[in-house]
Length: 568
Image 1: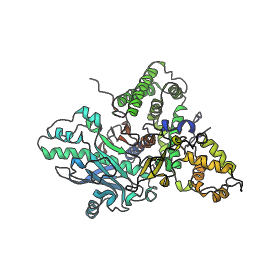
Image 2: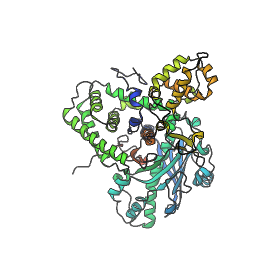
Image 3: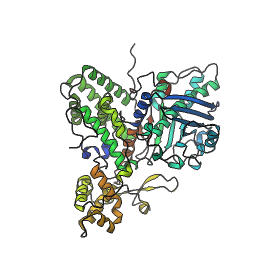
Image 4: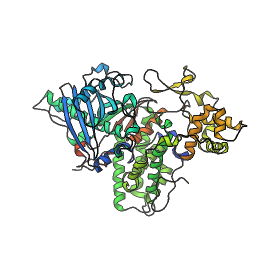
């Protein structure tokens, strides 16, 4: 029986098995939850009473200039330094190979002075081609929404509110094309800041960057509207303002992350599964909790109805989700009996009646109003990967083969000589140093392949172990077969950490990279996934979230689903 991270008070509930959870189709059906990194960030900001200010906003009528947004925590201050640019529409691109953007950003460690801002103004707009220092924590860039940005400025300048339909359809004013951290392009290494409480959970600096970019994008359109019509311009009403998040275009550069970080990925999944087990283990619930859950399902149905996508695969998934939510709504309205272990009963009904998309949405909903069982798990989602890196050379080959036969059983059943089973190869592009996925038998890329097919590599190591006649230790075997060191390490990690490995073929012809993207982005807290192919996807971040000046005024952690329509 799999055990959770911390002991549950009350009856024990087994965690779902890795064989169930760690399949690409299921991982690619995850939704945001209380354990998503955006949610974790805003809970901490509210709890620690962060103060947000905007000491600099020198932006002209074209949106060109500099702004600084500061976040003051209990011990430290962070500043997002924003540069607005006058980018011709024909230069606006979502591609990572773009060289110009509507806005560029750096998250600065502390309060920048005029010399810091001058230095950053000479480098941040150049992004990869510039030079940043260890005083910078992230580097980012964004483009304006072609459909919505100018519409909002025009409407506000004329004294009118933006069209609600357009806001619902697009959902953001700016769309980031990259948010770089963890030492990339010269910003500070993750190790240097990981001991800070505010950055202890994964990707908190990146989430803070996006959160402040959102504030900048709204302030920017209002400033441009005032510049066009000082006497007539109005601000966006709060209800519409909150419906605007930050868009993001994400491609294959993100996909290999969860394969390359098995120990970290294990902790993400383990915490999510532990949270689900804790909720399912609750013996009773109140009428108020049931009513709250019913309201949440109704809000989730609105969210699904507003989900815009043009991709056939996602259209089918959204249609299935919509159907599943209708079934869930009907079940909790009539047949749901909340007497003993009600949430487990509800989950088991979901297993029997819902597709993957609907079932994983139900998982997120079950976690939503159980902060007492869920929120402290955020402190267990990071990991010291160095502590998991060493290979145990003293392990016997029998132990290693036992792990392979357990964790990689799926791979041992695959005929790796068939082209469809190894049709793809992951490599790194020379131009942008970004991960790419190529067709093994159509492109000359095999010599540059990255070790991102653990299943195949485990099967190859297993074959060589079976023919090995030397000393029965991992160390002796790897001296003869050093090419298997990377997968021996992975297998040992997966033997200790049950959710470290995806139980699917990551180089198969039918493999969908967007499943990897969707999984990671769900942990970020992204919503409204809109694939543009099987290799890149658009999302929305922080939609419905309170703005910095609202954190102390609104129900700060009940923002992930749209509110119910107001009744007259």
